[in-house]
Length: 533
Image (cartoon, rainbow, N blue to C red):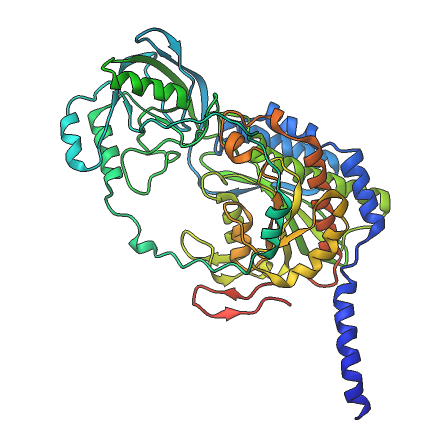
């Protein structure tokens, strides 16, 4: 055996060791991060500014306009660099509610718990009318209502049975839950969407055209979830045209509101008994366009040193729906990511150590209407993509410079680990970094994908994009898009823990000799390219 052949196993071992030596935990830095994140946290005060002072923050509204201005001023005051609002759009018009009331008059008075849907138009003062249940499954069923709905309040949902709560609505992950996540296999790729075959004149579309033509006074519904005064509300349904959204200037919209399930059910039971309930309603709302239909993301940086042209990004969406103050969705994520930036600034100041890569914070807008802010950022800076998606046609030079994007958008719950988004090569790296936080219960790694938020456009164009595993708390059954999404439902200890761990992950990503490994990237022309390994 020659010396060269004998040396090969040694070289393999050496290369393996070298690959992971750069991912060892910097204990000194983590100690400082823990101090500023756990002991000297500002995250709840940041969240109060975002939610109590600047909530809600509907995309396009004066609310998010003022919130962005506050964020820019705050980040500048901390010493962040290159703080700016980057435009995307045009988005369309904003909307803010000025006054709302709804009252039932029959068989006796009660105040109805309800909220108008975003972009619902104002009524002409206080309007009154009979409540009618429209029961139709096909176009022929509409004939019996023709000429009978003008000025009426229309119910279309059936009664939804409620059940009493014998268990607390909030929950944390059990050991079995986390084990299932950890043992999950590689995710199955989603099929390509055939945009040309989508659409068609469904009955639901015909129904809404009919309601508009009949000049109904308002459409009332109840959510598929929520009780005990919790009401889940989002945007109004456009009545008139395909490919028109409620925030488009030309959209024609009937007044719309969502009722608490108990009050919706009561109205429907009265109708079933032959009682004809009457209600009154007033909506005063204002369409707004503070920036002539354009929207903005807030971007801020901590400059790097020897690898300053490369970037580690971390962010959350800043916009919210309108019935609460946008606390768990997503004031929590925005506050935690701003806190990550603050913790890192304090850590740099105390340690005297600068990040190698540039650290870039992003606060996105337009997430609730379809990931608009993050997707537009990706299309502007990283890749030209397919229409309506993020499969890349061509890549831009900046795409190769981003090491990772970390996102937080699942409420107030603490971090229990991270979704790898089908990228197994980052697993041993994240394992080392997260093991340093076993005492904070954050060491689950899953190959699984998770969707519905702003890491997806980055992942779609080949940038390692990650969302953290967060405790579910009462996110989906109490606060997400509801009137209960307020600061009071944020959990301080959980948010401190999450900000601390994310700050460490961002820091250690910035200090590696190499960028994080990338998955193979499928381009729009179906060719596959290997990412940086």
